[in-house]
Image 1 (cartoon, rainbow, N blue to C red):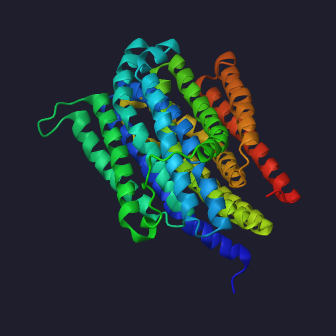
Image 2: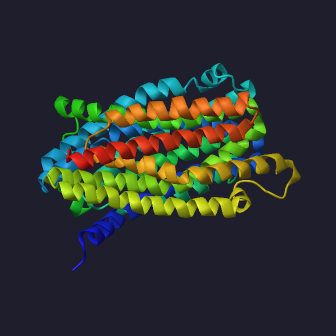
Image 3: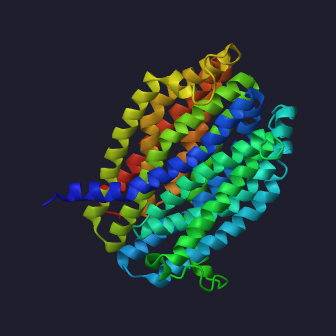
Length: 452
C-alpha cells in the first residue's frame, strides 16, 4: 500500500502534468511570435516586446479575477463531489467577469502608442507597437474564457482536453503568423500587425475548441455550463471578485514589475530591450512548470480544505513545493550550462550584427538561472494559499517584494551604479526572493496553526 505522501505525489503530478504542458503550449505561442519577429529584425522584435508587455499586463489582471473560480470550484467539490449547480453558477459568473474585464481593456489598449510614448519609449517603436496591440487585443476575451473553462476542467480532475486544444493552437498560430508576418498565398507581409492577428485568432480557436468539448463530452455535458448563461447571480459574482481581485493585483504587480523592467531596458537602448525580450521568453518557458504546479496545488489544497482534512491540506502544499523546487534547480543548471544554445532559438548567434544582443541575452540568463528556484517557490506558495482562499496577504507581499525591493534595487544598480541591464535583472531576482520567503512563512504559519 502506498504511503499518503506517495499517493499525493501521484495525484498532484497527474493533475499538474496536463496543466504544465498547457502552459508550455500557451507560452510557446508567444515564443513563436518572438522568434518570427526576431527574423524580421531587432527593431521589429523590440517594438513587439513593448506591445506584448502592455497586452500581458491586461491579460494577467483578468487572469487573476477569472481563475478565482478555481479555488471556489475546488472547495465546493471537496465539500460535495456532485455539486453540479454550484459549479455551473461559478463558471457562469466567471464568464460574465471575462466580459466585464475585456471591454475597458480594449478601450485602454486602443491607445497603446500614446501610453508607450508617455512612458518615455521611442516614438517610432511605439507607433509600430500600437498596430500590433490593436490586432492582438481582440484575443483577450476568448483568452479569459479559455482560462475559465480550464479552471473548471482542472477542478473536476480532467484537464487533458486543455492540453490537446492548446497544442493544436500552437501549430495553428505558427502557421498563420508565418503567413501573415512574411506574406504568402497572395497575402502581403503584415509584419507586427500580422503577428497580432495570428495571436488573436489562436486565442479565439482555443476558447471555441474548449467550449465545444464541454458541450459534447458526456463527462462535462451534465454540468450544462452554458445553460441560461444570461441569469444573474450577484452574490456569486461578488464572491468571485472579492477573492479574485487580490489575485489579480498580485499577478499584475508581478507582471508589471517585469514590464517596468522592459521600459527601463528601452531607456538603455534597443540592444538591451531585444536581449531582455529573448531572455524573458526563455525564463517564461521554464516558469510554466511552477505555474502549472501552482494551479494544481490550488485544486489539491482546495479539495482537502473543502473536506475539512487539515493533514491533507498540509500534505498537498508541501509535496508540491518540494517537487517544484527540485525542478527549478534543474532548470537553473540548464540556463547556466547552455545559454547561447537557448538564445540561438531566437536569433542567429553567428551573425555579427546580433553580437551585442546575444552577449546581453546570455548575461541576463545567468541572473535568470539564479532566481529560478525562488521564482518557483513564490508561484507555488501563492497557489497553496489560494487553495485556502487566502489572497489578501499575498497581494501585500507582492507589492512590497516586487515594487519596493525588486524595482528599487534594479533602478539603483542599473542606473545609479551603472550596471545597466545586469543591475535591473539582479533587482528582479531580489524581489522574487523576498516574495518567496514571505509566501512560505505565511503558509507555514497557517498550516502549523491549522487554519485551513
